[in-house]
Length: 280
Ligand SMILES: Cc1ncc(C[n+]2csc(CCOP(=O)(O)OP(=O)(O)O)c2C)c(N)n1
Image 1 (tube, rainbow, N blue to C red):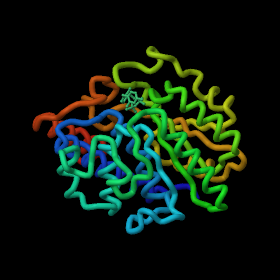
Image 2 (tube, rainbow, N blue to C red):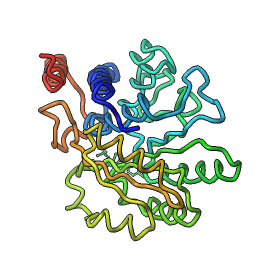
Image 3 (cartoon, protein in one colour):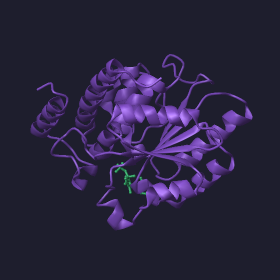
Image 4 (cartoon, rainbow, N blue to C red):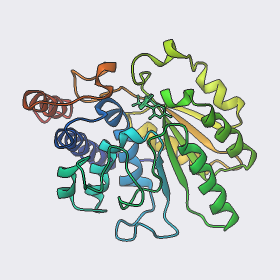
């Protein structure tokens, strides 16, 4: 069922809260991957607050849908969402990336409830996701696997090995999002090593391939539903996003791949997010 206007309004409220909490977690951590954590927000929000079959009270429930944030440096934006969903107390975020805390900058599945794979070394998440999806098929279970990769991460050859594998095994229970924010750690993806024509590449690897505005819940929702209905092949959703989305001084600036926020910058970042959502 396509998302209704009311549901979309609810998702926007969640995205507002998660973006704000991402900024606060970066402050508590003393720094973080702000740009990519903010570009991925709407993808995670639409999954967790509408489509995923998960139960935060039972994070290891066998039948749950799986999510692999392959761009593991986005953990500083993922943990606040998991806290909001009730996997653990938000209080814990105040020690994010502190010595002795369960939270490193990249989330550890053995320490953080709700995390299905420890990621951070780029290029591995889609292989893990394909393995999970194959496992579900072999066990004749109906849960689905979702994976989020960065576009810079698509420079890794292992992404394309996983793409071949998923096509070969007809993993129609696997959906991959490419967070296509066009920037990576130190510059413009297309200048460092061009991915275009990216859509054609995924098509030629045998994937059902969709392109959406990665900040438009209606488009994201329609694409997820199309992926769920597609039989015999995996689906990739190339989500066109903005690195740093919601914080005006971070948007499209590679310098904000990783950064710290003093109190002035924190205030301005939160104000910018509030303005973006019409709340200031
Ligand atoms: C194997 C590996 N090489 C290098 C890095 C360092 N690294 C961290 S983030 C990043 C850039 C990733 O760019 P992208 O996938 O586009 O992420 P986003 O822009 O969404 O943050 C790199 C190279 C890493 N984490 N893993």
